[in-house]
Length: 308
Image (cartoon, rainbow, N blue to C red; front, side):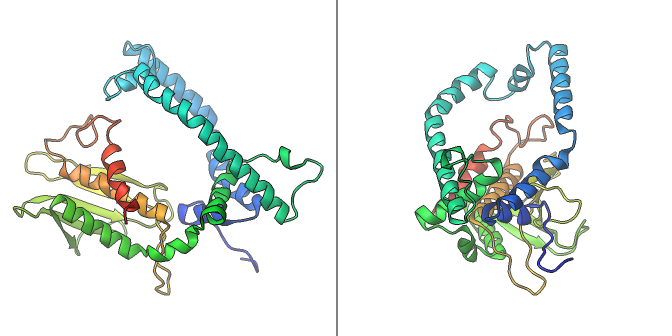
């Protein structure tokens, strides 16, 4: 609206590039506070209310805590098992994490000195690494110490290529065939629908929707939703919602960061998990598995994004 100004939303395609590439600390802080603090108003009060309600539910169900109630139907089985698993990991990772944070803080000192913004009165030792600094100085560290520029890497990952190649990998890996459906009822013209067939016998496995780009009022994260589960003659229908950048109005292709590629591959793994799981619908579990296992297939499959 004014010369030299750009409207920035709080959606990922705007938010993440600013937080990771903008050298002006005040801009990063303003955007970070707008999303993480101001947007949620009385969120702390709601969290406190939720904790109280969970405690009441646990007591009514004869549990000693919500943690005991939540883990009772999961692979972990108990809060004690979770603690026994995570505590040694934390102990081993803590020193390395502290070194990484200190490296980012030292880089911030150097960056502020380069910009003439280091307060001589406070001195370098009093510079603190703040929440809105982490993404920017992590990106700077990759560039300065390892020669990796996340913005330059985007040229290798045009959106259409990432989508089509990901689907090709999953079709070959799982023995499936995807057919795009051109005529269907849709909530937005950019949504795509695919029919999934078993390549070995031609039987229908299910359907999935892809809704990839941000818009006003849309869910702001990346996730998949089971619209229909397998039941007797009904095949499952899943939907992937993402907030990846869309092609420009002039036809310039959208370019993804490598992290966006990992996100897409990960979420598509959930789609495949939901469609390929055998057995009848079970409303108490996601894709017929314990809740703390549900990320495992996608986390394993996303390693594909790190292979040459």
